[in-house]
Length: 304
Image 1 (cartoon, rainbow, N blue to C red):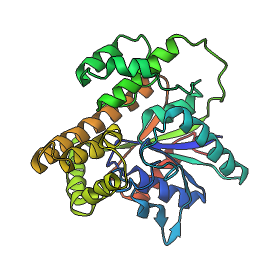
Image 2: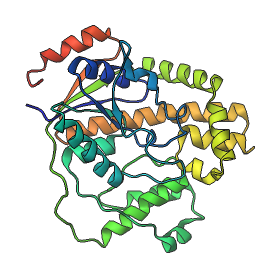
Image 3: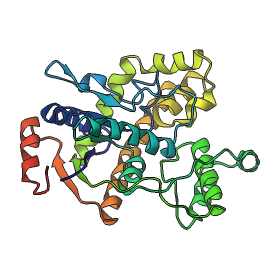
Image 4: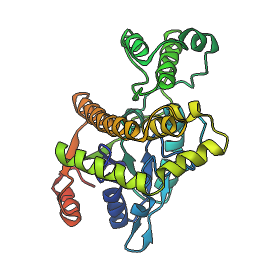
């Protein structure tokens, strides 16, 4: 029997609502695998959609959402440890945990039990790289034989951090892994490319009309620097550039929409890569009615 159910998929694929419905059926709890939903006050831009965790009037317990202050630099090393704490708590209740999210690096790290190091900041390296642009930094990243941090690098700060991690690993001896691999049933939300693009565009318009600009403005007013917010990429990068007068509203909208579409494409590339690396993913069509999706789980011979 599996030790975990993992539900993954690109942004706007409906994975959270499906995970919540399944958690309701199994009377269990959800562990979020999203690298930005860990931050408090970053709700609309990260798409927390907390209403999805209410099913038939019942609150589905969730973990690893709103656990950090904005401005902090949460990473996969911390996620791995926080995941196992939540995972153990849920298992001790006699329940089968559900891992749900779109950050492929986080998901793969816990399923494979990767050995990860807590990489400190390297001020000398940062000083040497500070004047390089994103394209130059991404070329540098390609020179490393094995990337330990393959998360998306849509800002200079994130690319520099990725290089910092690679440099640190070059000088470290491999150690015994802290965590064992986890046997998980993996369910992927399979959304048609055009439908995904349509949902992303509609969702972006809705979020901009319903407080996302004010959310970013409030974060800046609270004392966060523009650089801190740009670090998080996507919505926070482009809205910060707009609010600080670096780009127009039209430029922000166009660039952000393109960036989110590219991000979703990179997510799918990661998940297909997981399949090549030996993970068995059972794909479910997003557009299927919820009841039909739930009933299809019984078709998987290894479903618990």
